Image (cartoon, rainbow, N blue to C red):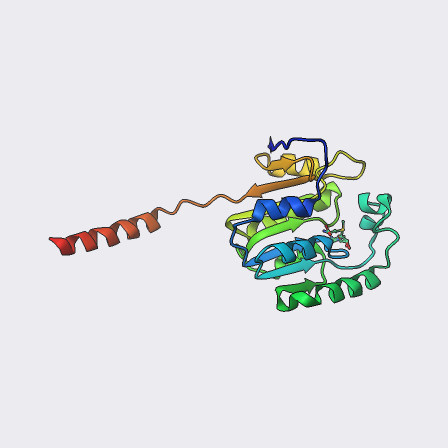
Length: 210
Ligand SMILES: C[S@@+](CC[C@H](N)C(=O)[O-])C[C@H]1O[C@@H](n2cnc3c(N)ncnc32)[C@H](O)[C@@H]1O
C-alpha cells in the first residue's frame, strides 16, 4: 500500500480526485457500486468522456446496512431511498444512454457482467468489512487489464472496514487520504504467444525485403 501525498491541509472530494486520476484514460465502460443521490456519478459523467456508467444500487433497506457508517452519520439513514432513486434518475436524464441503473446488490450486479469488461469500477456501497471484501472479490475480475478498481472512505471509523479489507486483499493499492480514496491498477498479464505472433509478423515483412 502506498500513500500519495498532496500538499496543503484542505480535504478534497472523492469526485474531484477521481476526475484528476482518470483524466486521459479510455473510459468506455465504468461502474459505480452505491449511487445514492448520484453526486459522484454526475460529477464523473460531466467531467470525463465516459461511454457508459452503470450505477449498481439496490435502493433498499436491509439489516446489515441499517446500522452502518453512512447511516450513523445520518445521510443515508434519514433518506427515503425510493424517493432518492427517483430524483437521481431525473438528475441523470441529461446524460441519456451514458447512464444506466442496475437496481441490485453489489454482488448480484457484478454477476451480470462478463470478466474484464470495465475500465473503472468505484466501490462505495456498504462499508462493513465483510461487504467491502465481497465487493472487491466480485468486481476485481470485472476490471480490464490496465483498468482501475477503486473505492471510497478509506477512513478509520467505527463500522468502516475499508482499511482492513484493502490492506488484506489489495496490499499494493494506492491511497489518497485527503480524498479518502484507494485505488488499484490491474496489471497486464504477460502473453508470450502475442509476442511470438508479433515477432513472426515482423520476420515475414523483413523476409519480403530479401
Ligand atoms: C455513501 S452512498 C453512495 C454515494 C455515492 N457513491 C456518491 O459518492 O455520490 C451508499 C449507497 O450504497 C448503497 N448500498 C448499500 N448497500 C449496498 C450493496 N450491498 N450493494 C450496492 N449498493 C449498496 C446505498 O443504497 C446507498 O445509496
